[in-house]
Image (cartoon, rainbow, N blue to C red; front, top):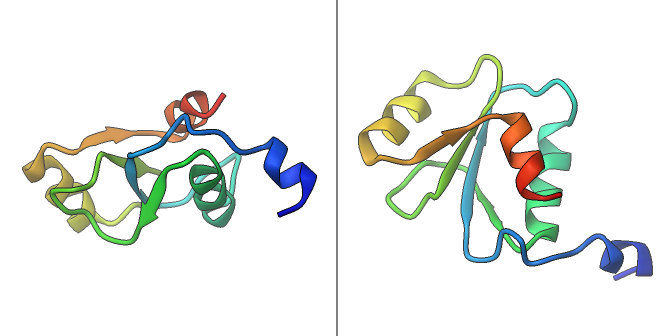
Length: 86
């Protein structure tokens, strides 16, 4: 790992699991996944009982939203996830 990559790592999201869905304005989905992982979090593809947060963007999948609501998963937006990593 490069010094730059090490400098941008933290454990702010340690132990948390995120599902990213939809399109985002200020950051690409790939970049968001990378930043979550750099901050100790885990990015997965589907909502389950182990999911802590659904990061909801524009045009997100309605099934993911329904499942998150049914399971009581906290739904946050782009601004909230970025604040969590500050």
